[in-house]
Amino acid sequence: MRTKRYRIALLASLAAIAAAGCGSGSTAATVIRVTPEEFFTGELKRLEPHLEMNAACVKLHSTGPPMKLHLSLEEFNNGKPREIARSESDQDEPTELSVTLRPVTDVNAKQKKYRVVIADQRAHRSTDWVLGVVPFRKTSMLRSTLTTDVTVPPLSGSSMRTVQTLTVPEDLTPNHPVAVLGWFEGSGASTTAGGETIEQKAARVEWAFVLRLELR
Image (cartoon, rainbow, N blue to C red):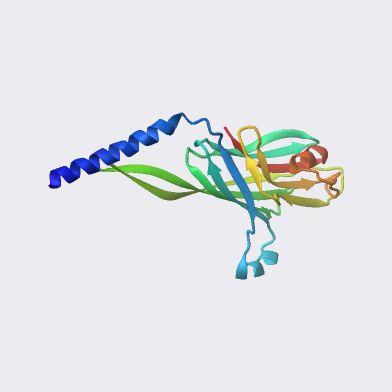
């Protein structure tokens, strides 16, 4: 009786694996829904004005086949972009991304600096095999952090600085990157045209840097 039950369970497992394999040829496109969230919530909002930093947070919900998520930090100097930092995830499912920006205190520094900290959380899915034949799927949460300092060059325009973050949900696809945060200084930084995106403003002002998500 036990042998018969074991065979039934084994056949059911193999059938499930075969069914999953049959769908592997799906042409569904990869889409990550990027939804802005409050960085400070509840009692933590009391700390916000005391920390002297700007922050942004987004939730990430992906559908379709896995792809690598790239985080790109770009500097724009008079409209010319230059990548200054990059990281990429493995084929895990991203779930959350947060970024903070604060001035770097250095009395010997001749130019302004900002410290950017980017933290991401993702779900890593793996499969263990019971008795070598029955698949057991499990999920673990992985976290990583990228820290970099950004130096502001001498600017001819106003010392006014502004920040713009993602305010409405957007779909991240291989053909449509999504900017999460933009920091602007110098000439043009104090004005924003109606409907102007983070990337459009970065290309227009004297100096800016932008955190952008891409799928590849």
